[in-house]
Length: 512
Image 1 (cartoon, rainbow, N blue to C red):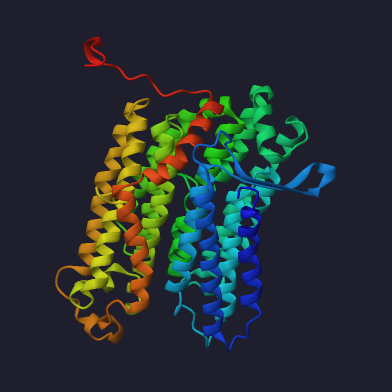
Image 2: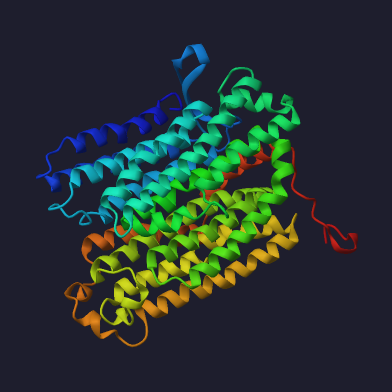
């Protein structure tokens, strides 16, 4: 079954679906939504089949390999392949998109904007997300890395709220600048790497690249990925974009798109530039720890729910960063698992916040207060999403955060200890948000809003139920996912040339 073209088919399906949905007349909004939902479910079904076909015991790091000639003169190909890291990210994409489409069912005001266009843009965005994780040719990866900006730019700029034009332009410019840094490094890598863009071949050639050259090339990739993630101090576009984007699109922006940055660090920076990765590691660790504390402190003071969730994500990406650059199996596996779990938890949090905002007509915390008395089930889901976001034991993010801190502590104790302060701050900003929004005395203004008396509908229950279930299942039994991630992380650490530290047994009494 590994000869079946899973990845090319998965990549093309959403693009075809986007064309079909875009062709539906504006007056047939319900049909457009239904087609988009069914199309995303087909992608999910094919992804599940691919997951089942993936062999954890295979000696080959990359499976489902496909390659089709594209630009022979430059040795550029449509090359697709997936290791365990790419596979779990592809599954995250496939799971989140139908949920977001269903959550966004009533987000588009047909009198002002076109629903077929919005849902077509969502499918087009899914096409770019699958492509960027499936690409095994660096030039192809770069193309998807840049093209993904287009659908999200129009989603924020045309369908967002507040300062949506400002947020869309800022998002586009930041990402475009990062992409230019990457383009320079991609060209340089082609020159010094033997005139090929094939990832596997470039990994083999990486050790022969001159040290100074490799460090400059690493820096170009790192800046692009640090902006995309985003890491401190490249983060300022995210709160604006997350605050202006529709809630469903914001869930994809933070839950999936930002993972391209951390995925790129792990896949490309570490494997292609092993010496440069080790050389820059102290700087990246410092930036990651600063980001954890800085973003958490800013989140505490936010009055806008969507901006608050955006700042929490910046802090979480700091944890992912220290896990990657700790260069341990636990840290690396924890970071990849964190990418998945953060996508699920923050996706749920953004979606639920969007439900509150849609009912109240405002995203300001000060416009709520005691909302749990009117919508107790919705308030309960917000509480669960908040607890998952702060990595409560029993939820999936706890496992990944624990692995990251254990892996980091074994090599960089100071950074791990400082990062734990972020856990305390996470409890502060999440619980304070929930208290001010759903607990306490009921805000009299809420009683005057009819929509605030409507608790979760059947559609909304179907939206949140899969995410809650996944967060609980992976919180108690993450083994099926970690078994897929581990071999790829170990291979990456081999590329970097690092090993897990040997455990120290007190008094030399090993084995007792």
